[in-house]
Image (cartoon, rainbow, N blue to C red; front, side, top):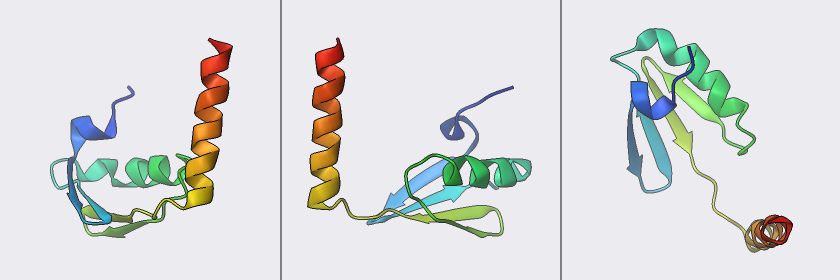
Length: 78
């Protein structure tokens, strides 16, 4: 059964960090870590007990421009 991360955890944002609390569903820790690592978002989750800490990288100008370009291309395909 597939569920979204937001359905089974409590997510809090503190400045540039995401704090993902899995204390209600500790069995989901390994699948959640794997999903974050395989998301393709260049994130590095750090587990600590039933909590996962994720440092959110700053968006660089180059990355922002690449996102704009991909959105424009996607819009042209519609």
